[in-house]
Image (cartoon, rainbow, N blue to C red; front, side, top):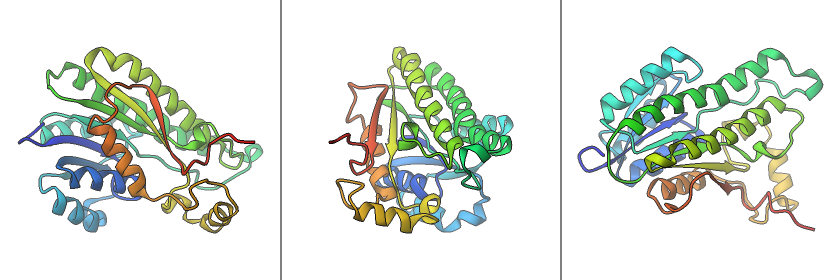
Length: 256
């Protein structure tokens, strides 16, 4: 906590789900260290919106798949925030080409897992070490943004599914490891959310939703995920850790 405000780090913060999360936190009196790969001038509109809500919030450019960038992200986050109450691992990519499982390339596999799984894991490791050593009081947590793809097969983007399934176990492992320090860990699994990642197949998803894919008959919005993360960050589920919270409109309900 700095100047009476809780402090959060959000990766992949400038667009899509990350934007929804970071703005929800900023709107509710969090100071946010927003992390993204694009230079500041490319995210100026977003930063204007973020700092209008939370003037002390700031942006760090960095690629979580790079060990050097991860070290710098942690350093700049602590320099600007003083402490970290909430870490949100949101940064992630889809394959550049949706290819059948038979056609997946090693290059695509390594790229997707390098960011979505390896990058997120080792960034969390670095933050977790500092959070565990920090005597800060108050509720603290780590949130992993995975996907329904952690358990739902999509054979034309297998590397993405594998990365999210691995990240789900990472969330479980950190929940177990950090419990002794009073740090809660959660996994949030969005369903079909209106972002750049889903824009190319939006027509397909709109049709499936209209045909009954989700009991809640609409596509999800980044704000839906943002409100969920805000509740977790505020400690609304303080007697839970290592749990999966679905934000999917009921899509994964098993029914006859």
